[in-house]
Each structure stands twice: as structure tokens, then as C-alpha cells.
Length: 397
Image 1 (cartoon, helix red, strand yellow):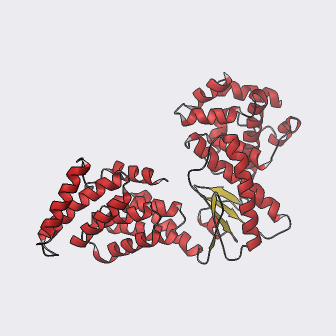
Image 2: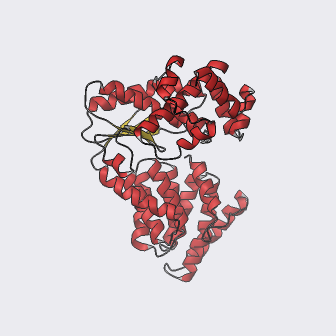
């Protein structure tokens, strides 16, 4: 999430404690700041007058932060906090400002101050901070931010569940080490061999070059990748034991030391990276069957036409709606094998009749706001039902 997107998300919250935007011109703001400084010279800290000045200065700092003048915002917010160290809103925005510039140590310092000193603050800001930290795999900071969300009265059950999950995940992540690649931030359990981490980085960078070109998109920030030496995390989130990788905004892979592990790891990483790029290129609007068909195709799986009927064994879902519905429910291993094979074959059919480039065009149409039927029809002249019926004929179902 970019700094602008983060701040937009916070502004969209519309929380009762939010500071109203300061619409004054630059010159008017500077005159107001000078006046506040002059008044502050004769005001004792800890008084109601100091608190009022803190609010006024905080409002101007907020305006600069909104306009991405982060340095000036931090200067004014720091002064505002100095006038009133119980100003929870100013403290929240100071935390956000330091996150914005990547100064996570200072951000954590202000989070700790909130925990120790402040009796009230807008919980929504801490909810957003929790999401930012979690997306960066800064689990301890995420737990602290979400704990503040709860302490300040946040009631959103989704955020509270994320706090519980992050606490559990943090307990499993002790001792993880990190490795920075050009487009990835890799975190690995202590028992994952260093060689496997470097192989993962190499294979991910190679796959990224191919896939980003294919999808016509770039990831906006380094992709978080977590390599686990066991299945503790997968068990925590109820991932079936036959699944070795998942994508939930982070690429998570279970690394098992066995013969051919490097080849298996490369395939799984390529698969999960495709999920990330499909999400990015479609603005997270691609249907599940397209996700799963394309990610298999990218990891190198192919299903020859002559084998489709025997692989499906008469268990095709009969419609695209049925196929999509199968990815919304929990599947056993046999059912998953059938649904995934059908999705892969349907993607192969789409590429066979319209070329590989059609996929990126459909995803781009989705990103522009088109529904899937409209996105598909614009590029192929086919409705989803016509595509599926054509696949059945092509596959000999």
C-alpha cells in the first residue's frame, strides 16, 4: 500500500475524532503557525490553553500530511505533541508520518508512547496502521497497533480477529531472518537452509521478469514472501496438508527438505507470484477459476486435450458458474484435483482460440471496471456460457 493510498484510506474512515482539513493557503498557514508559537511562549504545559494550541497546530500538521508534505507535517505534529502529550490524535498521526517515510523505529516509539501515556485516540488510525505493518510482515508492530485499536475502543470485528491472528502468527515467526531481493522481501524460518532462501530469491526474480511482462503490470512495492520450515502456520489457518503454498497478500510456502525440493519450490513460488500479479493487473477482480487456471499454467502445468476427459472422469462442473462456485468452498483433495484441472484446461482453451495475449487484455478490462462477462466479450466476442460450451466441445466432454 502506498503512502498516498494509506492516507486516503484513513481520510475515508471519517472517524468522529478526525481533524478537519485545513484549507488555508501556505502564507495563511505560516502566519497561523507564527501566531501559535507566539502564544505558546506564555502558556504553561499541561494547561487547557496548551491543549488548545496543540489542537490548532495539529490541524495544520494534518493538512501538510494530507498533502504529502511529510517533513513539514512531522515538524508541526512533534511541536503539537510537545504542547500536549495526551493528544492522542496528534500521536496517531505522528506514528503514521514516520511509517510513511519508512522510519519504523520512530513509529514504534510513538506507538509505545500511546500505549503508555494516552487515554484516548481515534482507533481507526491504529487499525489502518495495523494493516500496513502486517502487509510489511512487521508482526510485532502490527500486534501493537491493533492492540491500540482495541484499547481505544475499536469495535470492528475484522480488525479484532486480525489482532488475534497476528498474535498467533507472531508466536510462530520467532527467529525468522530476512533477505532483500530487487522485487521481494523474503522471511525464512531458522531451519530453512540459506541456500534455499537464495534459490527462492533467484527463481522469484526470474519468474517476475517473465510474468510481469506477460501481465503488463508491476507490483507497486516489494512482495512479501514467507518460507516456513514446517506446517505450523498452514495448520493455524486450516490449509489442507496437500497444499504447500498460498497467497493471501503474502506469498507463503512450506519448504520441505527432500529430493527435488528446489524444483518443487520454484514451481510453487512461480504459481503464487502469478496470483499476486493477477490480483494487481485486475485490481483484485479476476474470478477464482481464472486465478487458478492461470497460476497453474505459469508454474508449467499443461493438460493435453486427449487427457482431459479421463482426468475429469465425468466430473466437470457443467458451467462456468459451477466451476467458480467450486473455488468458493472447501475442497477435498479429489474435488480440488478435478476443479483445478478444469480451470487449467479452460484457460488453455481460451489461449488456443484467441492467443495468450487475450488473458492480459481481459484482466485489464476488469481493472478498468468491466464485469467479467463484459471484459471477456470485449476481447473474444464470447459470453462466459459460450466460452464454456466451446471448451466442452474442444475437450470432448
